[in-house]
Amino acid sequence: MQISSRFTIATHMLTVIALECQEQKVTSDVLAASVGVNPVIIRKILSQLKSADLISVARGRGGAIIRKDLKDITLLDVYQAVESLGKSGQLFSFHEHPNPSCPIGRNIHFVLDDKLSEIQAAMEKELSKTSLADVVASAQEKIKKQSIS
Image (cartoon, rainbow, N blue to C red; front, side, top):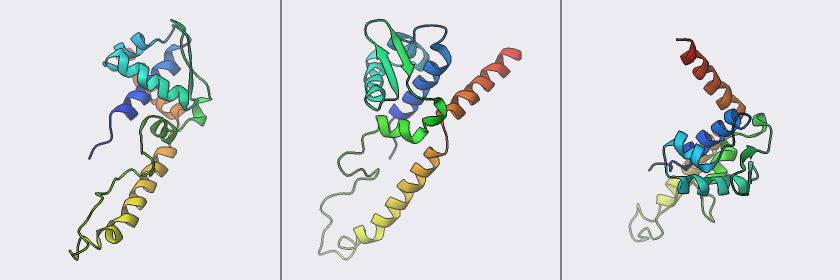
């Protein structure tokens, strides 16, 4: 299983917006060029970030800006904005019809449900420890080091 790339794309996009919005209008074309994906994908993720109230996007060619202080946006916020966990809110989906006549089938939920919930909680806890400010600072540091060498 792999989490979709929407999360890393969204984090990349927010970093670009944070670092570039003062210098230029950050449009879907600007973001697509940085991320290396089709602008349609960028616009979809922009819409999700806007719905989560993380950004605002001016109509037409106005560009995107971040609505909150970078330290107040965590990677968990970004993850929750763009990754669909469905109605269950669970990261791991479970096959619907394990065989109740099979000793493993009738017990597999009991064996796995709590463990999978713990894993999801641990991942969410870790994501909540890193702010967008941390990501932007790391990006700035890396860019600065590259420009010196």
